[in-house]
Image (tube, rainbow, N blue to C red; front, side, top):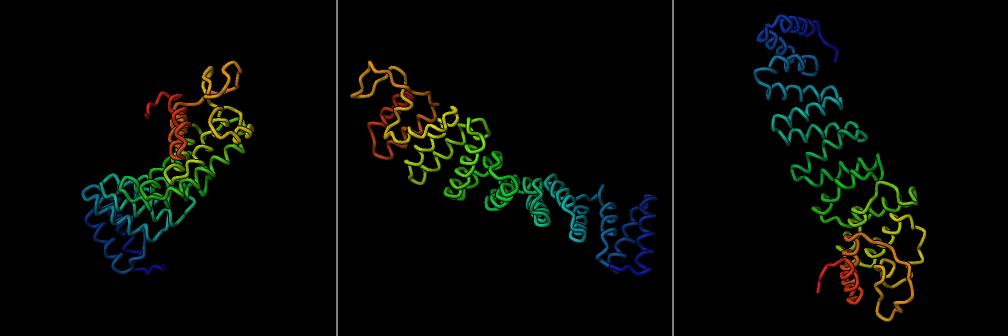
Length: 286
């Protein structure tokens, strides 16, 4: 705003008093300037400094008032951190929200907001912030890992499937030999998501294709035509009706992957294959 000569004079005198360490006089002059013109950020800033040492909580409130006048992302982040340090967690979350509103693409602001929201159990806010990060960095593994428990708390499993499946597809396309950030644990998470919505067929497909991809065999889709999991049988362990003298090519499989296959086969009602999977993983379900 256009400042009157009176307000300018008060600001000048108040700043001089502050520099001279005449804190009470500086505070009085700044309060008078604010009473005349409350939209002057500099007055709020100096007034906050006057209370910083003796009354940090009051100083923080004054700085927050100033922040509403200057619209600065970094300032809101700083105030969020300060509020958090003083134990005002809801106020900190408000500050982070203001920073994110000013710039939705600011990843640091979104991370701070998501972290604190999770800490406070505000899972919808955490979800909003983490999805904003994923919008900037699609399929980011760290963001996906942070988002998974949030979606579980919100019972939004289908959203988790959507995000993890899209990430899995993307990593397979970008890293056909299986070298990338999407690893065993993320394939297991996706399979568990599918099982949790009673879709064991997709869980099995996820485990099979995921294992192949991690082994650099992502192009061996012909294994999908097999109704069982013989692709991952242990060496020298023939199936019922299979000639043990005939060598069949098989591949290793992570123990947790075998566990998921067993669960999924049992969910499908294929108890025979479920027993095979569980025996291979030494998980005695029967």
